[in-house]
Image 1 (tube, rainbow, N blue to C red):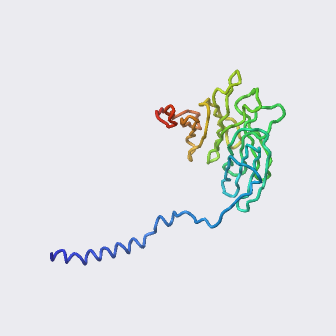
Image 2: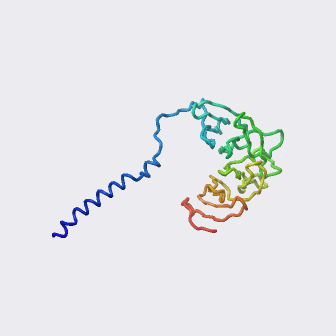
Image 3: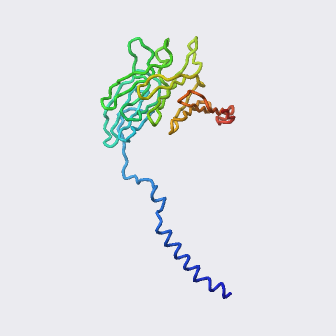
Length: 249
């Protein structure tokens, strides 16, 4: 019993020292705490019904796409001001993306150019709101105006690649599969195309640019190497479950 009584002062001293040390250390939760929301911003969309949105890399601009009303708008987020508004003649395609340098906004093809149906994507100058370039799709001789229009696309965060998905039509006009096309994000030149599963739902680059993940409407997931166009992994969905199962790599 005497030994236990003698140990109490030591334990008490240790507790005081431990408390002092812990209070002197920085609290990680405080360092990484989320910023407080001080106000709400409500955009007046003037009757538009956006179904796609994208931030500029610096967070100052917001772009919206309204497929139903065929309108693309670039907003100043801080002032809620509409900077540019473009009419989109083509239906289809619900993706938007700023290039990594923030100078351009990429959208599915805005409008045809005469009888040229090869257009897949349009590049908009953020400063002027004008279309400065059109990117051809993978089909060199499309027999329908909308075949080459990009349905889904994304840009790599480092500014190296632009990946786009279009529909491939068979001889009778039916949609047979999707086509993945990878472009150079610097000059929008075509690098390669690959046939992929029909019904692409979403695609995304990894932060390192090493991989491109694609999900289709059946729930399947494929992972590609953008640099080589090689499929490295495939996860197929169990029939009727919508969940990924068997893995191939």
